[in-house]
Length: 218
Image (cartoon, rainbow, N blue to C red; front, side, top):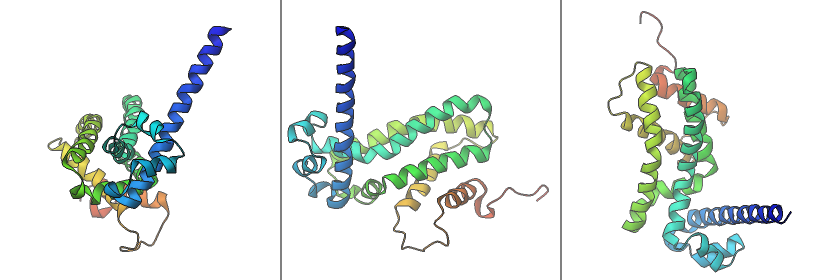
């Protein structure tokens, strides 16, 4: 019985620690997106998260470390979820439309959920301290390795050239994330339906301006 109670206590402690970390990251994402890296403070983030400064630094020792977590979380979360799902599906030989549509759909929705952080990542890079910038992009590039491995294998298996596959993947990611982060006031679209937007983006990536496969003989 004592062992069971101790195990339950450890589980609750880990859960509380995970919850606190998530609260801190959420508060930091809001603060950084509103105030920028230089304007946000550890004290302000702790206050917004409803934790003490000591609890905050227990999870993130420096503002640079917390900023790197906030800036890389959206893309790394997408990469982790997508690679896990597709690693389990690859034996089923997914079709090209399935592969592209699910990649675009997952990335689009994940980006929408963290649009403030993504805008800060894309548009304030030149204002960051060199050490902070290096930490952020190093984490992102490490995470992209798994996507590049899958893309290299899948693009080749469908008969497409794998030359510069890294450029292909980065261009697709930039296209989707750029679409999400640009102010919606720029060239307002006729539809705001997310499913329709995702389908259109996926078709544009896969088929170009034609938005559909070429007819036989053309």
